[in-house]
Image: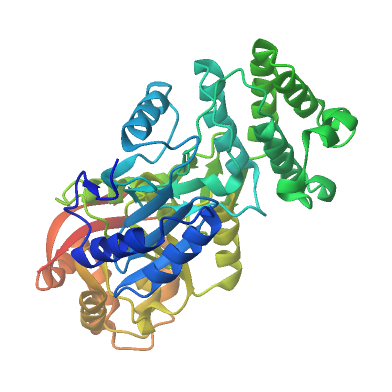
Length: 469
């Protein structure tokens, strides 16, 4: 192959990057040092307008254009990566084996020294932190490898990344024979379990952990605190994959049991052993109101959603998990409840959630969809109904949901006695649903409204699905 580029597809890469890489190729490919080439590529790419280098591995540089969700990977060819055609076939084998990878977006070009392709941006894992949910996700990916006899030699934590709410392998350049003697992945698993069980000896070694160390320690039999981890590592080393699968299922059971969490604090939620967030009782009913509203949103693009007065964040977090393309803000004036929110967010590794401690009246956020559950009847003590509507319109571009109590609602009776403004400007509109609809229709298109069944006879709360006029 000549040093001229084979352009496979350059629709999504601008001429400036293409020309610069061509200059680098013509002037620098004679070096025999991968490290020097990587350094040269990285330093020159950094000089390009609107491009930044995200990082580099042993034979690859990652660059991204500002405000773009594509990463361009400049990969030096070696004994594993020999051509774009080889890489296409490698990706096909991984897909056929149901391995969760972030596929190449476009194959761009190649020459004698390196190839370039693009990939959707993900958020890589840290190599120094795992929790049970992360380990569960990794083990489920590895189970597909074992069952389909398709193994990658380098599946270190840094090679996994979050994309649209799920965990994928984004760095999978190396290929290997399933029955090869490459034991690097076993030491990487030992590292991962060391982090999970807070054992410092192995994870301090990092890439320096060798298979000889594991053999000497009898594959962590007296180290991890879980005999099933020892069984898994030992059987992988012995290439007894039937027994390894049995041990893997037992490890998955142990790890997934550590994910489970139940939280009750006005809202009720449960995280099951697979990390799925389930809402209970009235919390689930309120989420279903959002689901109904969201079914009217005609876009596949990500939206911004804000759960105001979010309590412990159950509704907003469920939205974030079910619709990972959206960005969700959880806002609350009570710091202790936000601490509970953060604990749940960390447990299931939600990547699209922001927590904010604020008073909704003073909020400067403007989002596509605003949620105001169990909130505005408290605000009415000091803010008129008309001003509340004006506030919503300032904070909301497209849609909102409001929950309010009416008539003889037990909580409303207490709050009305605490009002500081004229009754006819505030709680008058909560005497019955029709009075509220009368003023609300001046500001919003009322898409739907219905009563929320709390299961308590003294509560009379309605939810309103509104579209901004």
